[in-house]
Length: 388
Image (cartoon, rainbow, N blue to C red):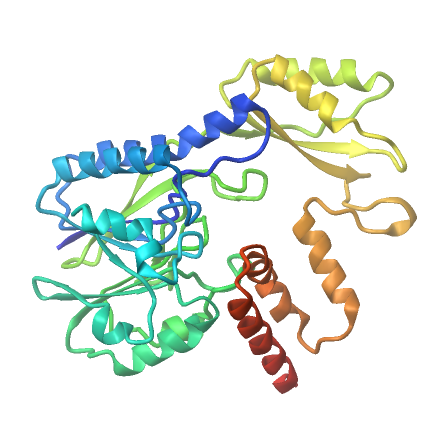
């Protein structure tokens, strides 16, 4: 059996910024999914897996839904006999099925959809031929226990494939990740584990891997994502061999370090004019700044835009290091600042656990999900009390 596995499409994502940038990036997420569909058209595929975050948000507008339907229609036209399995991710998870646009796609006959539930072991099962698929969904902070329980009860004599919106902790620092020890429990029990959540490719273990995260099809965190390759995974269950199907995300370029002597803006214009001749449209620019020196980011962004560059991201450095005046650390993102503040509280035995869950806590707070917020907060405090 041949499987195509992708994840984290984030259809409908529209970042802030000027109109040209926001609209271009909005289109990019649909464009790369369509490119993938075109690229796999000649391949033999029995099951197409989307392991979470098909949509960037659980609430979508008419244009997002229409564009998504068109792409699924195209995919079904190319591969009418192919099964399409979709699980919820943290971005499009819905607690009531009647509110889910994924359920709408299922009801229209485009795909089968699965979400995390307490009785997932009996309800979230899909069989094709002699292979059993277990689409777990997105268990969030329950992912460790959920997968440990599944590994304990999984019939190793069957041909099993697990689909879960998670990755191994350490690749990135996010809520909803698992330890390598938990994934080790599935050794010799599965043909394949289809992961997601993290936006860079990974395969575990290095020798004879069975747990795969394809990464996103398009950059979502342009300055921080390390890999320049994006795509899906094509897996043969008979040979257990895989290959990556690479697609073309929006081009980005990390430039040389920018520094200046006297006239910052005119020197920056000369600097950017050289790079603007190239095809890359997203620029990551390391900048050497001097202590207490004002750096007019918005004016420099406008200069870059005049030269046809879609967006620039500045990495501030002082003397080649990320330090500022009086020896205090500078922060390249709000996330880094939040982490430093949490560590400075000195109230928790294990602040890293709170840091891993902080973005999820903020998300619950912003969405008014008090029950989920309090539940996760209690879980963190209980773990902290038990910490050595």
